[in-house]
Length: 333
Image (spheres, rainbow, N blue to C red):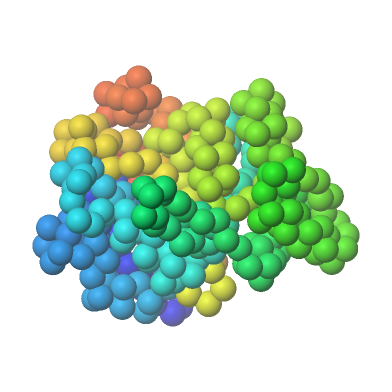
């Protein structure tokens, strides 16, 4: 079996703590892995003045998958550069254009596919002479086509329903988005395509989340609606993500922030990180059976060893130990 290279970016706040539990799980899996840890985010700013040091980026480019903890915190607010600049930078450099955000709970099993390297967050921005501030939302049809194809392909593996979300009644970028997605539909005859306006979809995500399967949308809409979906299925503390490209390694990270208020207390819930690790096993390393085994072990640990946010008393490490115990019953050593 070929040795796979996993780059770990612990980041800030609780990032190193939840990353430690992911590392324990990785080391227990029957895989040949090479793990390395690198500076990223605020920790990298403090050490070398750059949230994405060249050595870190080079290691990411050589990796088979990148596992990321969390970045940011009040320690870097107001500084000349923010930790989040490293996050946006590594996404752009690895061209991980499709962000997968599953949201699963009783009666709910949906997947948001968010375009990740275009739109408002990457467009021209600035301040005019009169004080007007602007951020520009720009998309090329090729950017829309590639993320839409990824969404169609994912929908084909699920229930065959795809909802494309836009604001075509107002925005030119959305009108182009809808045209491109519609033109692709005949290539996927097994997938039922529908279109929805972002505001009405937001309402339905709250009122009837179980009616959705796969949703695809541009960057800013995806940022917002994926958090809404996380909220109706347990909160950001449980939400995982995978950011995928075509040729470069994927980035797998929990959706929660760095939670500096509980950093170092042992209270952090590593569920989102371990669910992100399961996504890495499936989409980054091609190990779906191990991914399912890890998902089951995490769910059992949530019942048997809940952390304080789930109403229990288990520490981060104790939760990780419960996951390892559950995994040991499913995966041969």
